[in-house]
Image (cartoon, rainbow, N blue to C red; front, side, top):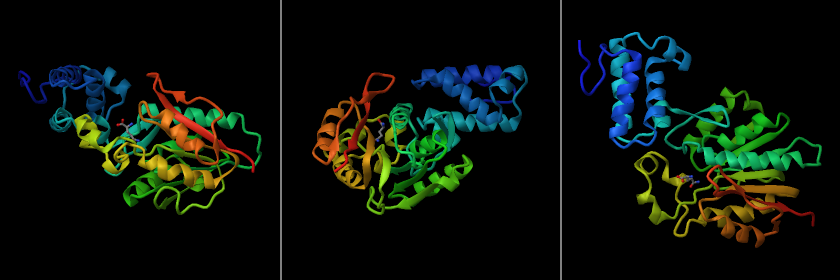
Length: 297
Ligand code: GLN
């Protein structure tokens, strides 16, 4: 039986289905067609990469063909692969997602890298206390707790759904006994003091949101994207709150949108915080993680 020009049927081998899907995604203008096709075939067939290679020549079952076609239709409608799979890797760890959480971005790993650099310079000996403001899936906080085995952390979020997702991720990663999750605006329910406060707050200017890709504007929660008129509403709220809740020598690290790092430094310097190093750039050269310290009184 000849495979249909569109759609998958049991006449396809795993390898030919993967190629056909990559070609369909490419002609629809999807950005990384080969990677997405591999991930979707793997998910539809419940196979890892090794399984896909060793079974490349076998034919799809009717159930697999139907599942793959359903995934293909969703991706062709610009739903991100991470949403279709309901999971995304961040810092090498698996994170479940929900409609209330951003898909964690590779850029955000820059915040984790800078935090770990600061911890390597740390002189205090007590177990580090970390807060993550607007934790979403818990990605930043849980990556840090995974790396720093004696640290404790708390994540806040306005969304109860996001907090449930983060809590589930903490448990799945074996970090449930070192993390807590609290519903509040920014850090308002926290007292501290904290050795480190991190945040990837919403920072897209409201008027820019309609111009984002379909993948972002229709699938990421706007609460996690919308930074108000100029994009800085969240920084203006959270920087003074964080400054009050850091211990002397403690650090605040926030993610910055493209071109925002300088203005964020100005907001930090206007509080009790001291800028002691340049922002850290992500892999594309954008100043992505901005830090400041609270100095002893
Ligand atoms: N980095 C995300 C994007 O560019 C935005 C996340 C945020 O506002 N914190 O789509």
